[in-house]
Length: 404
Image (cartoon, rainbow, N blue to C red):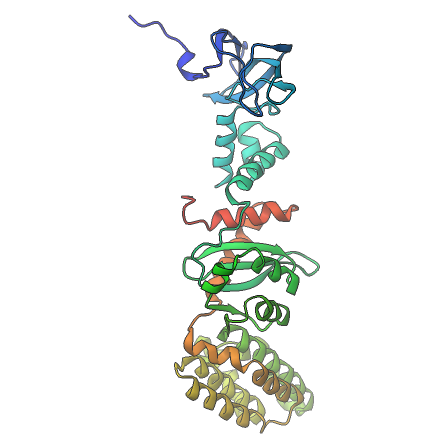
């Protein structure tokens, strides 16, 4: 007949269990251990064994719970004289780090919980301090993701995300083909993206073919300086978004010039004009849009130009796309408005990135979806005050090997 024993639950080879004690409420258990004299103590730095013990003490180390009972292990701590390090070191007992107060398996458990739960909830579940939980999670994240993985990168997407109020941004770099967040950096400057490229070696840079982004000059400058062979692609979403701002400015000017009896048609039309006409479903909205376009020729012309602008991204031959841009610019210049003329000049300045879409039909819509998930991560944690920790959590969330 076997005798019940708790020893199999504590398979620590460098100590031996000598006794246990449990509180009256059974909510706290203490496992008392002593050094296993069959094994020579080893240095926690270099692993050199020795018999020379300098000092002895004890420490309480938190372990995994058993049911609803918190478990603490009373551990012997010996300071040894390491002949290799030529210094006094703490003995390595292997099941916890010498300067930690929790076992390695509890730390791993905390890390696994942090993959699916906020730090606050993990701290409440385990009874640990929130700072301790964050420190453990960040330690594992640094081990896994401290070095940027530049392998197999050919097509990238770059965008920024607001991390807090006051124009505080972080730059996000996405592997377009795998959907993996490769890197995150503070701010959205040329230096930010430059630091990403400078972490790559020459063969890795040469493998890059194209990068999707918006028309943000600091990012463009960084790409042209560091990887000039890479084709920059401007996607439809950001160009149409810029043209929507032009439509809104024209709408405001047309409203001011309209007769008093016609101003009611303009009211409430701001977001109506920004929608694709296929998405205007309510009968009331469709009727207002029809009246507005019938009333104002400029607004009607802008809506037609918006539809024509989207068609440019449907071409797969640079010559046809270039011809369509020229035709679109000629039509747009028939509208006598400074913002329209400014947009035409902007379109001509960034024409190369639109034409590159013919060769690389990529866009940042995939990155916009990533940004939405990043916002969920940030909101779930009630914001992150540590940008490094935030970036590591995001990279982990989009790691295809993460398994969460």
